[in-house]
Image 1: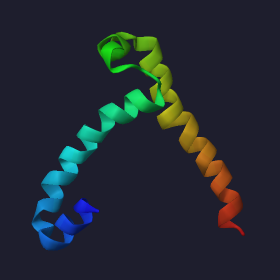
Image 2 (image 1 turned 90 degrees about the vertical axis):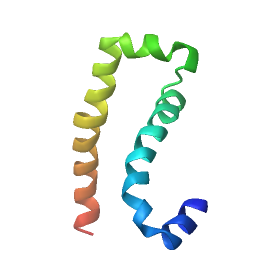
Image 3 (image 1 turned 180 degrees about the vertical axis):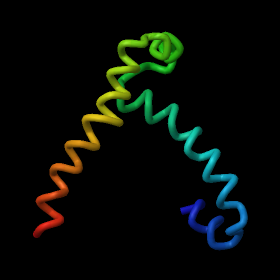
Image 4 (image 1 turned 120 degrees about the vertical axis):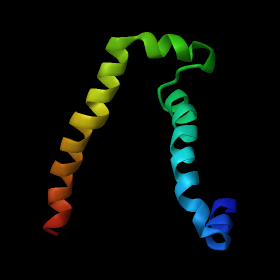
Length: 76
C-alpha cells in the first residue's frame, strides 16, 4: 500500500525505486522458493549445477510450457 501511495504522490521516484526493488526482492524470493537458508546462500550460489538447472527451468522450460498452455486460452 505504501508503494502505491508513493507512486501516486511522487511518480518521479518510480524509475529509481523500480531498479532497486527488483534486486532487493530477488534475494528473499530466491531463498524462500528454493528452500535455501540465508546462512547457506553463498554456498548455493557456488553450486553451478544447481544454478544452471534453476536457470534452465525458469528461462527455457517454463516459458515453453506457458506458451503451449496459453494457446488453449488464446483460441477460446
